[in-house]
Image (cartoon, rainbow, N blue to C red):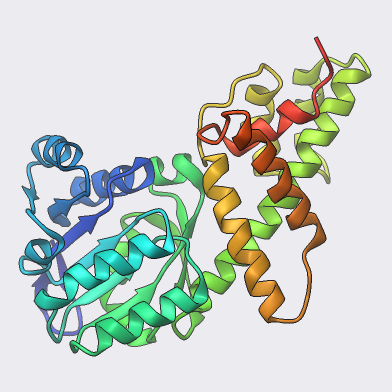
Length: 296
């Protein structure tokens, strides 16, 4: 639980969506005493985590909403967000806040906000970046869309999960900022996997290449964290390739609506679909290296 500085009351927090990212974020919330209840579509997963953390496993999303003031949501796709929110609606009331960490379209965020605000509750779209490392270590960056006053009420909750919180503007602007992030990640992935495949073809010691390049102008988080694993043929998911493909599809639709194209993003999405067809959708996005590495 956390104290709401505006109303000087204790906020109870619930978490919905206990996949890899959501479970890690829920654990961090529990570590600092914020978490009261959890719910997941797969009940066994919720039961195990509830026992581990000593919190309530809610029977339904509405049951969870009836127990808490702040509802944190992290699911995979637009339809999942809207389905969960439809199930929350009967139990929502004025004063509650729903914070959605999922990566969805801006239109979905706006639709979700309209549904929730009709109950008197408030909504923030708050997608995150930082991968599994960020989720586990509470070092995520959070891009928030919605009312500034609502953000200030839940800032202590978000601070337990992250080290950077930026208010982007009205509802939907958080998802717009996340779309920019996902397009940039696609370009970085293409550049790093192609460059490292090039280095391997030239016969270089790739550990030395990663070490020296990481300290220069081309250095970046993805190279430093994923370079050593991809060059060894290890693609344990930090961010699943199939999820990034889903996000890039959203980005392409947003770009089309804005009257522009994203050629590099389209290329990366197509590469991902090729890898998904080969059974690699649940691997890390660095599995793009599979298409570029030199033949054995």
